[in-house]
Length: 108
Image 1 (spheres, helix red, strand yellow):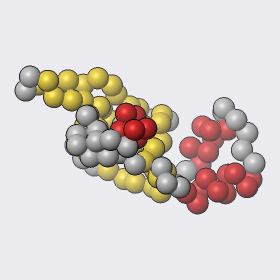
Image 2: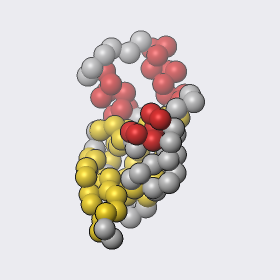
Image 3: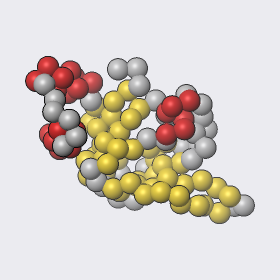
Image 4: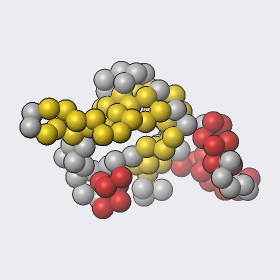
């Protein structure tokens, strides 16, 4: 979690109170290679910070998988369209290696 807090502090200083509130909202999640963070047809209700690992966002077109983005360590991840609109995802997000993320619920 310290990696996330430090990353945020690169953009804006956090007060002790804000830091504590954020830490109370975050949940650590661990995934194995080939696990899915989200699958097409599901609603994404979390925003993530990828502390360790790598993943890809992809969709199907004419029976082929089309990868349209990759996520690597120290970046924020979500299925943006689904997260913002609260509609089902049109993409899949799959882990390329074992990964550790910090999740915060949209309802937090």
